[in-house]
Image 1 (cartoon, helix red, strand yellow):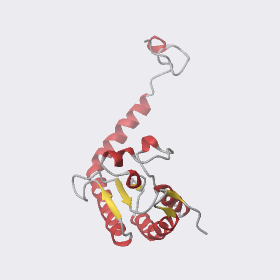
Image 2 (cartoon, one colour):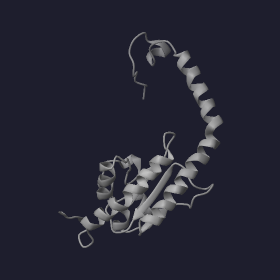
Image 3 (cartoon, helix red, strand yellow):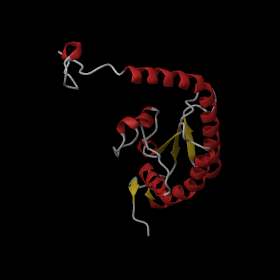
Image 4 (cartoon, rainbow, N blue to C red):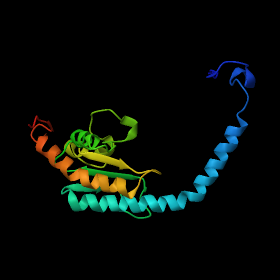
Length: 177
């Protein structure tokens, strides 16, 4: 199958790419990659420390919260924390966190916006209710200890409200005044 041009114009590279190669952009990208590599170990350690505080704080304040994946340490992806929270549906937890100004997700980024149990948690052996209780918190270069504290202050009440609205018989949300 022939390649289809994305940009149209001068027809360089046998009409596959138009325009002049952005040399300055390529040099800037290479430099940015060098800088990121120089800071990778430091950033990994920083994110690991934040994740460890987050995980410990959730365990201390949210009964029924279970870490999915390795314990904090060298075998853990520092920027991701996946929890299941017994007796909740993730959508209610996400709504409460969003109202508190906290961004989170309930499953893999590749299926964002799909209201289905997490296929990852199901593959790990959780039943449908458990797979619907997943909460994914991610950390990045802008994450701070204050961000972690904000989550730890908001999450217990968010979970309390989500549990109050959860119907274990039906596995969905009910209206709570």
